[in-house]
Image 1: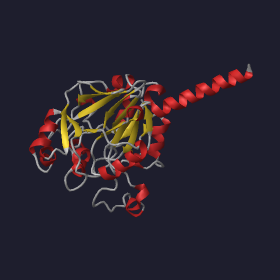
Image 2: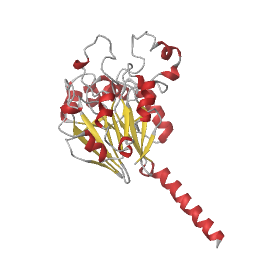
Image 3: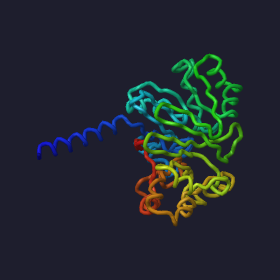
Image 4: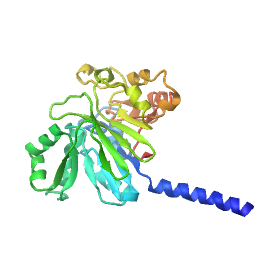
Length: 304
């Protein structure tokens, strides 16, 4: 009897481990703002340690959805650090890249596509998922248009709230307000077989959106959301109203009355080099964690 109980327990444990190995998951590849940390030309005291110690550097925000059971891996954002992030994705997934989802046309989110061209990888028909204005921007402007004309990438159109099915994962883009000089901006809802996530690396103030971020976070298991700046004034004399992102302090205040369970779903990501959350040892980082929120770091895995 005892042997059968032990055997049954071992079987359940083995089943859980196998499921953990095969269920899709989000893999965080970068957490910085578009220009990385440290940014070009920053030789201030906060930047110098990272110039001298590469382990302190932070690459622009990118995540991947890895589905081992279906031998697929999708990249969300093609950052200027695409080369290194693709290598780490290959180390993690050990399978070819299946496609790329873009949010908008700011430098940290699409310029890595250059590595797919004839001067570099020379890919063939790499699926690139983009909204209509984003697709037109790539198709009509060099050097990106050459990727299209040479067949290095295959543009696959997205529409607001229209799901894209990727085997066991469904990706749904939704429009968000942002500085849309060249393209619209989207976030993504990523629905796996067991859990769901939203990914909103860039957005204007929450009150500029006709959706409730609180209700949206309550509807998912993970929320990887814009944390470009921690609080007003961190750019010195620069007018931060001209760069309208939700401050981390503002986001935390919105969730002040939410349960710890809800707050634990939030993963702050896309941090400018001025944001003290980039450093895991700052008072601000401790404050965020003590209040039940999370700070995204490279290598975090979130099962779907």
